[in-house]
Image (cartoon, rainbow, N blue to C red; front, side, top):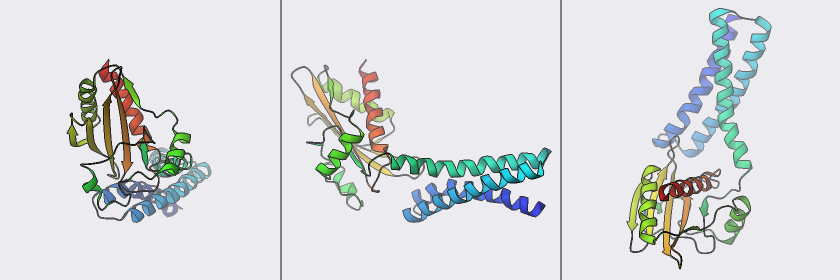
Length: 240
C-alpha cells in the first residue's frame, strides 16, 4: 500500500512537471507547438487522476504527519495541473476562434515594419476580413476608436510611454505618420503577438486605433482583446 501511495504522489509531481516544462520547451524551440499542447493535455489528465486518487487515499487511510503532508501536496499539485489547462480550455470555448483584433474593423491599421517579421508566421499579415470583424464586434463590442482632446503629438508620446511600460518590443515608430509598431511576447510559451497603433488628428484633438494580431494559432483565447483593453486603460492614465 505504501508503494501505491508513493505512486500517487509521483503522479502529482509528474503532472506539475509536464505543465511547467510545456511552455519553456516550445519557447526554446525544443518542442513543436503540437507536442507542447499534448504535454498540457496529459498534465491535465494525470493531474485530475492524481487529485481524485489522493483524496480517496486520504479518506480511506487517514494518514498522519509527514505522510499526510505529502498527500496534501499531491492533491494540490494534481488540482493545479488540471485547473490551468482546463481553465484555458473553458476560456477558449467562450471567445470566438479569431486572432486578429482591432478597434477599427472597417479600416484596420496596417503592419508595415512588422510585415517582414511575419513572413514565416502561420497567420498572414493581412486582415482576415468581414467574418472576423463580425465575430469581434459580437464578442468585444466595447473595443472602438480611442478619442482624445489632446493633439496628435501628445497622444503619440503617451502611446510610446505605454508601449514601454507594457514591456513590448518597439519595432518602429513614426510621429510624422502617426504609427507605432511593436511585438508583445507572452511569458510562458513565448508566443509573439504583433501590435500596430495608428494616431490621426481630428477636429477636436486626435484619435487612436490599435490592432493586435497573433503570429500562430487559430484562436488567441481572448489575449489580443485583453491586450488592447489594458493598453487603452493605461493610456487614459498616462494622459491624466
